[in-house]
Image: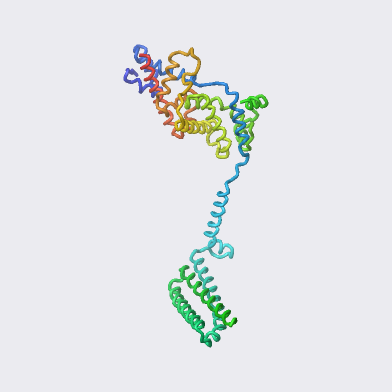
Length: 204
Length: 188
């Protein structure tokens, strides 16, 4: 292939073209000069490597390395973060682990239904124990004519009414955990009110 | 200084005692100082030269090499041998040099002391090349330095600079072209 001065850069990029470019350069002083410089750059470059004695460098590095802790301790916050992550993971995985423990299916729908049944059973047991407490206090409370007794009666009536309303709402939205918690809260308030009244009556 | 001299007298640089890089790395992970000494013996010269080219003086270059070994010591667990140790060291060194450069820019700016260092009886073209190298694009200069001066392969340079191998080749060509143009101008 016959190459000309304008092909120089293409030839420098393409090693296969270099023999033809050199052939052209034999008769072209400008290209010969360019090729000479091109070759000289690579020939001289290794000479730019800089060497010098540094007798104190390694001892300095070694002293620094020796001063470094051998075992880098993990910062306390990393442990805390790892622990928090584990707790969150465990909380998230708990519903999936229940059927594994009992050997039952891991169908999510089944899980939700079963969890709800457990809540309802607990609620029923709780309600029964509060009813027993209520029966215990009822006679005493109805007989009393003091303003305090009236206030307790009024509060219990309000709580019973709230519980009844919420139970209706819960029936239409059985999987709503917020409503379940609210219902449990009302039961707790009723329990506390009854306990307070009984303690009050015993003191008097 | 006196302490360092004493240390050198008591503990002269040791000869190699690890058969291969994997054995050497395992010793480095156990934080055996002798293993790091071996790494220094193998790579220290090249690291100093590269740092000198970037920073322009020997004192800063040695500081950069020291910083490189500290980073190697602290982060040896992060090295998983997907590249070779020399390549990884070069990458740490270049970053350390850039950190030092930034620090130097923030502080007072001393003049580079030794850019014309080296034997005085060099050919004029060698001196011109040395000076021209300072004026080309920094990333082209870096590839030229690693390939032509330090003898690394394009695959290694690509790993150090985290660029494709083709980019390394293209930058080398651009570096040579820029240098040729500058040398042509100086010879007119």
